[in-house]
Image (cartoon, rainbow, N blue to C red; front, side):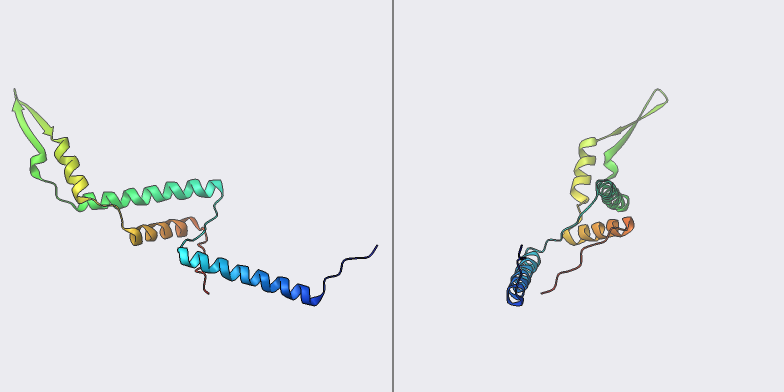
Length: 128
């Protein structure tokens, strides 16, 4: 039986085709600005859980820094009993009006922090 031999010229052509395809893919990834992350199921659960925690911490910090309108809570005294009343509609309106989701850059910072905290390697920037 004779073996199929590949000439140097054929190998060179195949390598050039592969390099061309790789450069094309790198250009598409850079153009789209998307990074590809690969997680195991356990890493994904940890990532989502940690991301949610950091996101909620961010919201909580905004709430702590905000001074709510004093009219949200009213207090009445009935038969020596203090009855507080909270106007939920006003409270929700103030929260929605004054607490905002992180912008894209802040969100990417949160994602990077979570990945670093979990020790998950981030993809490197692809350069042309």
